[in-house]
Length: 141
Image (cartoon, rainbow, N blue to C red; front, side, top):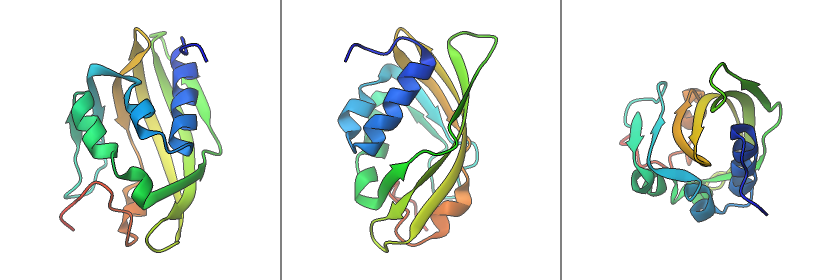
């Protein structure tokens, strides 16, 4: 597959990699100095990750805790900046430890430069991590 060119194409590709549990390939979509932010992160969870290595460390154990099955209700909105999109979606699956269902609502503001994510503000619903086994980020809860 050739590298996705538009921000929407790159984003759709990134979702496929998450479903495939290919975290190294997902991390490779990031610019070296990319920044991932979680403005609604609960206490003990990171609010800002700076650089591809920090993002890789955060995501490394994601598939051990969360088994994603799909991203229904995906809507990608263009903005006045052609490199920035706003994404609305749900992530559904299950928590590996308990088998409990997972259904998380997301809104993300994503910027792409030169075919890589440079900024990703993830306004995810923090209520989803109140379930035991959801804590792949190593919070102190």
